[in-house]
Structures are given as structure tokens and as C-alpha cells.
Figure 1 (cartoon, helix red, strand yellow):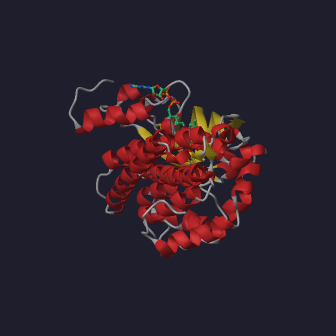
Figure 2: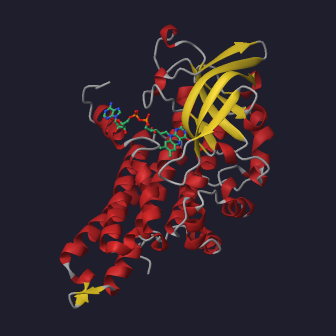
Length: 387
Ligand SMILES: Cc1cc2nc3c(=O)[nH]c(=O)nc-3n(C[C@H](O)[C@H](O)[C@H](O)COP(=O)(O)OP(=O)(O)OC[C@H]3O[C@@H](n4cnc5c(N)ncnc54)[C@H](O)[C@@H]3O)c2cc1C
């Protein structure tokens, strides 16, 4: 049974659904158990052109918008998969598309479209500064025709399944800029050149089967031509990418949320305890209904954030609110689904515990719920700045 009335983009939904049918829950379960990477699934998505959805046709992609990209990501999670293995390419693409030079676009985009190159990683977070991004300590110093990078990053995902990374580093010391958001720049790092030649990768074993790493830079040299846009403006550029990331992850949470609702409604109709289906008890119905309402509401905010992003209008508030609503709704749906499966919810073969762990991540990454509340309080409600 399909519990959502959302029938927008039926062609994309049908096609992605057909592809996902070749990679059923058992596939993702086995990958999770082995702490592996769904390489065959990502290859199939790439070959079918979905990973190049945002690349304009002139560079070999299909020229779709963030709205369509969000539907692709939603469908993957809704069918039991996890877009976290590959969503980086979608939002990193936006940064290159909007701020890269024509030469950079011609150099990278056609090869990303064919799958020859993968742009799955973005290096922003650092261990000692956390969410306080403008305080990052990684520096890139220009020396002739190269930048020399020193510093450290943490939680940088998909490095082992990517050829390129977008890196945020300070090019002017914080003490020398007027505004703290100035003086940072973004670069394309060719991981095949960098690893072992100034860049070291240390994987982090974590609660979700999500490939993520600590990165160490010691005099890593990057060609100056790999700077994206203007030096010192990188923070502004990366915000576009972060808005796309938040909106796509909202869509993934919506996919997760519907998956949990489908699963729990089917189960509670059939599971008979005390002589009646457990779903006949209002104590069981209400948390499921509440989560469903919240997913439907989050879905509307997701489309609004996509619409604004695609129209190149400011969308920070909507992207943040969509991510907040969707991550909360999918988490409530996950809790209800686990709870009403009783002991069976804990059995790996039901896939609930896997999806439960996967959707929990989005309360913290890519931005924590508290930071979204603080953004809304300050930027939308005009409350005094707290930090
Ligand atoms: C699996 C995984 C994958 C990731 N992938 C990437 C990636 O590919 N690239 C990348 O750059 N980063 C990545 N991240 C990092 C992620 O974006 C950060 O973990 C997240 O933004 C939170 O930052 P932090 O961990 O430094 O938490 P901190 O900034 O240390 O904050 C910890 C907690 O304190 C609270 N808090 C902090 N400040 C405030 C405040 N002012 N008011 C109220 N509450 C506050 C929040 O609840 C927050 O969750 C990933 C993280 C994980 C776990």
C-alpha cells in the first residue's frame, strides 16, 4: 500500500522505483551487515543517468532542477535504500555549476555525467571548531601557481568512493577580514592526486553504515586553477551547496518517513494481540497518524524550498525548515514503527533497525536541529543573536 497522495513527477518516480526494485531490502541489509558500500546500486544509478540529473544537457546531463533531484533521492529511501551513499554528487554539483568557471565545467561535468569521475565529497567540518564554520583552521596559502593546504577535517563522507572533493579552507586569516564569513575559499581537490601526497585519510567506524573519514593535510599542493570562483568568497558559495544538501536530505527523510508508515500500518493491521489487530487501539493509531501528518507537512516545505532554489531566489529559511520538519517527522515515524513491531522491530531481517539508525543521523547532520532553531529565531523572528 502507498500511504502518500504525492503523485507529482510520476515518470521519475516510476523509473527510479523500477531501478530500485533490482536492489531490494535484502541487498541493502547485506551491505549494512558487511559495512560495505552499495557500489552496484550507485553504478546502476549513474548508468541510468540519475546521478547527472542536475548537469545541464550541454555538458552531458539531463538538466533537471533540484525539485526533480529531490524526488530521485526521496524514491531511493522510500523503497528501503539509503541515498546517503551517493547524495553528495547532487549537492556538490550545484556548487560547481553555479560558481565554477566555464573551463572547470567543461573539464569536469561531461566526465561526471558519464560516471568517469565522481564528485561525492565536500570537506567543511573540522574537529576543533564544529558548527562554528567561520573559525575553521585549515588554511590554503597561495605560492606561485599553487595553493598549499594545511589542517584537518572530520566526518568527510564518501572519500573512498569519490574522485573529487570540494574543500573549504581559509585563505585570509580571520583576524584580517572585516566580516568573519569573508576570507574563506573553495577548491576542487583531485583525490587521486592528493591522497598520499599531502593528504591522509582515516576512516571513522560509526553507528550508521556511512563511509566517513578524518582528513589530515600537510603541505598538500593544489593547482591555483582549482580555486572555484573568487578567492575569499567561498563561504557564500558553499551556502548554496548547503541549502541544496539540506533540501535533498529533507526529501530523503520524507522517503524514510513514508517507508516507516507503510511498514507500520501494514503490520499493525495484521498483528493480533488480545483478540484484535493492535492497529485497532488508538494508543497505537495516534502516534502513527501524528507522524504521517508531520511527513505530509514537511513534504510541502520541501517543494517550497526546491521551488525557491530552482528559481535562484533566497531559500535558506525554507531549506532549513524543510530539513527540520522532515528529519523530525521521519524520526517520529521510525520510533512508532519500531515500537509497534514490538520485539520484531529489533530483528535485522525486518530492516527497521537499519532504517531507524539511518534516519537518526539527520537530527545531527548535515546541520543539527538546534542550529536550525537558532537560525529561525535570529534570522526570521529577529530575536537577539546568541552566538
Ligand atoms: C555520519 C556523518 C557524516 C558527515 N558527513 C560530512 C561531510 O561529508 N562533510 C562535512 O563537512 N561534514 C560532515 N559531517 C559533519 C556534520 O555536518 C556535523 O557533525 C554537524 O554539522 C554537527 O557538527 P559537530 O559534530 O561539530 O557538532 P558541534 O558543533 O560540536 O555541536 C554538538 C551539538 O551541540 C549542540 N549545539 C552546538 N552549538 C549550539 C548552539 N549555539 N546552540 C544550541 N545548541 C548547540 C547541537 O545540538 C549539536 O548537535 C558528517 C557527520 C556525520 C555524523
